[in-house]
Image (tube, rainbow, N blue to C red; front, side, top):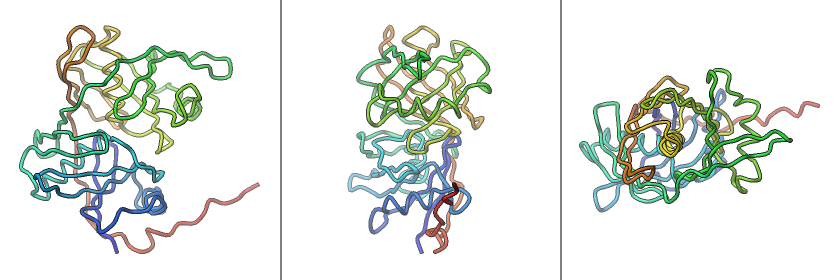
Length: 278
């Protein structure tokens, strides 16, 4: 049996393995992250101490693929490190995207000081069966496509347009996370996210919030600090400093909670294949 923790960062839920003897296989990750028949999660990360007093995390999406960076996952990794007594209120988390400093704001809130993006948002129009979809493309840990949505976010067409946009040829072979954003006020936005690797809407996407804030800054729609309300109802706060439309520094803060500790039972590793209905 395998011991695990379950955490949530603003609605993004993760399984965590602490200092496992070996990294889990993609098949095991896909099985454990399956909802309804196993534990269920948006992803999984492993966490280990480093000689320098920080921690090393490796993040996997629910499809078993390894991701360079998951911002909410990194905040959860820091929350778990604090819980384990590896640090008190600040820790450096080494990710595949580089080292990130995490700060515990209180018992259930973690902030990350993040490297600013190498390039700003690029206006991009995607052709979807003759229908133009205007947005912005940029890299924040991974690729993101941000759509400014001027209607109720309840009506945003994630179920219909999320899958084809996420895999659009113009976004490269790996595709991108897709976000519908309501820039409600200079200090406030709402966001819904369709995430690659999860292949569905998630309750939050930390890097997507950062990408949305960057788009808002570059187009004059928002100013820092800005609060982002996610599908899960949590609020994530983007702060930092900008010189004109160029970010000099930024951070993301918000809810990061420890939900459970337990053992993966054998049945959690065995799920049926989908039915082959004709």
